[in-house]
Image 1 (tube, one colour):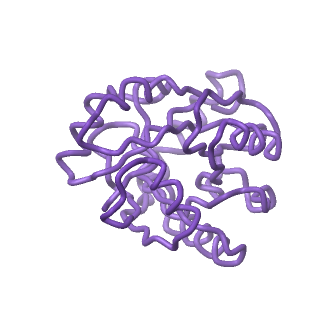
Image 2 (cartoon, rainbow, N blue to C red):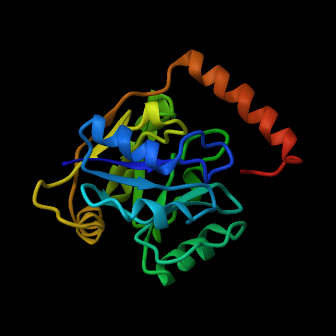
Length: 217
């Protein structure tokens, strides 16, 4: 079963597609599981969870003081702006698991020094990260003996499924997905971000950073 565990909807400030458009795109690409992990918003899950032909994992991408952390299996919104350890604790208290999102990404990754043992897994394949960054994340997960996740980091429905993780075909609900993330070594794959896309992304990120008053997303 193929899953994209990192998608952004219009509930993210930089997301361009509705929840309904994302689900339709996921169906068209043969995905059976998705996680809409909006920036500091848990609102998409109320809509996405109504889908009956696809597993939807409750998720959020939380902006810690050091960078982005993915929260899966949570039952509530997680407050932004806290330190890495405090954010991990809040995610665990909300019933979820904490995943280091694209840790080597220059703009929003938390950096290797902040990938602490308290993380439940590391995102090692992200379609908006470079091949080098994904490779470093993969090596770090091996070094720390941490499970791996993957996702497109799509901000537009057309990019849903650009990166993915393979789960067992007998999984029936999002709780099974969480268990398999933690307990299994699943295959991750997809496309990396090209050099041209990296330049565009850097220009866009700097422009938005200035517009936010030099605050992280």
